[in-house]
Image (cartoon, rainbow, N blue to C red; front, top):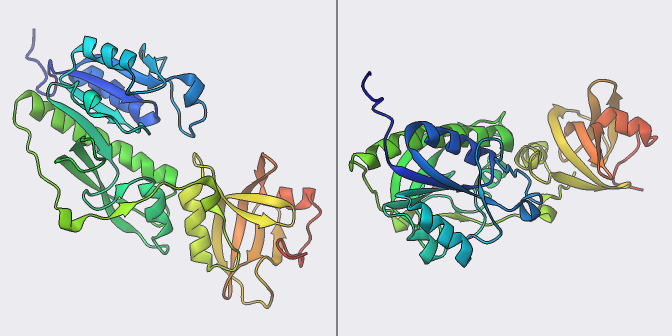
Length: 318
């Protein structure tokens, strides 16, 4: 028999997660550790999440509706994990859950902690980007009762590029998370991990967004409109305008110059195979490429023709 892969350990690990990242972390921990269990959100609650993954094809999860309830606590305790890794769980863990791991309960947070504590981090960073690329990163940290405050175990940088959407940015989060977990599990198994306390003087915080926060005004500059769409597109609820036809959700747009007179909302062009060119703030337009209305998603040029919209009409003025 050959020597054991140095990245493979007997460390007992447990995953708490219900997202595509939880799937990737579960598969990785199967390879590099002794994975003793997976806790997932019960489908009755999970199906309301935008990026829910039940993981049933890769494991037999323990279902819970409340990570802090007694039944869940007792099941995790029975697995006797040394390390728990939390992946995208929306509940705050109470102290009795955090203490179930004999070594660490580890969180993954898509920011260079202590900068960017809180919620909806990637959405906010794209919204704030003003169309520019941002140097950002992903942190592994020790979870504490107060969220995002624990010591940092590892950090991996990545860029949120101007071409990224929230989906592609989160794929970078997932990739960097796996890199850090593989490094860190090996270090913990060898008792070689390093803990870096967060500098309280550098803390910034973001807050949870609600679907209604996705409203766009077509009087905004084109860059701002584009950033909102990039930040809130699938798998999130979407950015929308209040049109003459009701809420119109915008899933994909691009910026174009159009030195024309007219109010925001003016339909300048409807181009088969490209979309609908709409006037926004300043001397700029945006191509609406992919939209949804009344729950039906389609190409914007097809939607315009279905609704009888013509060039010269205004989407927001009656």
